[in-house]
Amino acid sequence: MTNSNNSGKRLIFLISGPLGTGKSTVSKQLAKKLPNCVMIEGDHLFHMFNEGSAADSTSWERRVSVTWTNLAAVTRTFLQDGLNVVIDFVVEEELEWFKEQIADFHAEIRYAVLRADAEILKNRLERRGDPDSLDRSLFLLNQLETSPANKPYLYDTTTKQPDEIVLDLLEDGRFRLPHTRNVEENINGEHGEHAE
Image 1 (cartoon, helix red, strand yellow):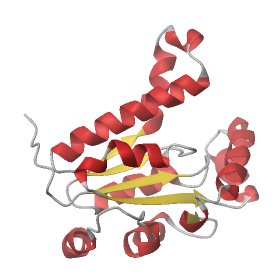
Image 2 (cartoon, rainbow, N blue to C red):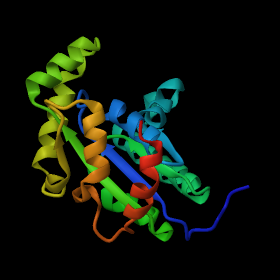
Image 3 (cartoon, rainbow, N blue to C red):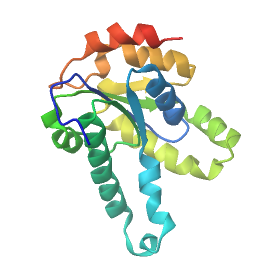
Image 4 (cartoon, helix red, strand yellow):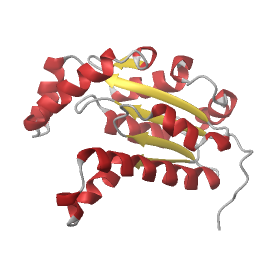
């Protein structure tokens, strides 16, 4: 019961960044602002391994690989139904692979790597009761910031509020990946009606 017409204008937002940068909050607000949009939380797919015995026998790398395969499959299903998609998950080396998986939809892909100063990350993680994640968050911050592929897409959330971040992500064309369809007129035409 899916609409397999691939000609409609569709948008995919990939929101990446280490823990504590506001990925989930921003992704949720973004998905509510975009017309006809769903949100995929990559962590939900990743943590499915923790619910069964596969957690003991599946390497971290394999879990990440399977999660990305599932992210692509779920994204394709939503695109087939004419929906826009926001994905909340850390993107390390998977961006080009992901683009290839959904290339036949000719969707616009926007990519943002959220970052924040280390002290802010520490404070945010402590506030939410997750200080044990600080080392992983700082590792990812360094990895994502030093990747040349991420440089144009870095966005500093240190002093920003989520609604301000969402507005910037919607309006700033620098987050649009090259060689993906531009659906700007669709967003600007419909986003005003849905903005609060």
